[in-house]
Amino acid sequence: MVEWGKAPWTLRAYVVFAVVGAVIVATVVSSTPVAPRLFLVAFEVVVCFFLLRRVRWLWLLTIAFVLLGFVLEVIEGNLRWYGIAQGIVALIFLLHPATQEFFRRAETPASA
Image (cartoon, rainbow, N blue to C red; front, side):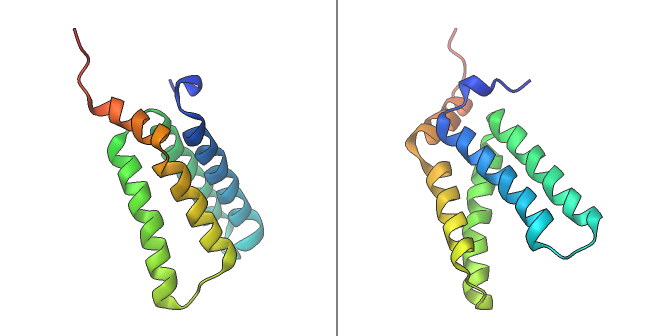
């Protein structure tokens, strides 16, 4: 089970930010059929669940995908202010020292 209180405030803020963002995209922005929109929200909830469980490789992959999103937006010429703002806020939360320390503790072996 996820121990919400042990996660730093920055990671908890990222989780709220990411899930609310996925819900907004699924309900307001997207014009795709319902099933892919529901999958997006469910996928984001699962990713956030495992981030709160200190899955370090998923944290690194999340950072990489945020950066990849920036690169793809630049290549496509599809830069929007809210996409840039969302990516910057996500990186601030994910790269904050408290979040880094949380995931750094995940890889150190337990001392006996």
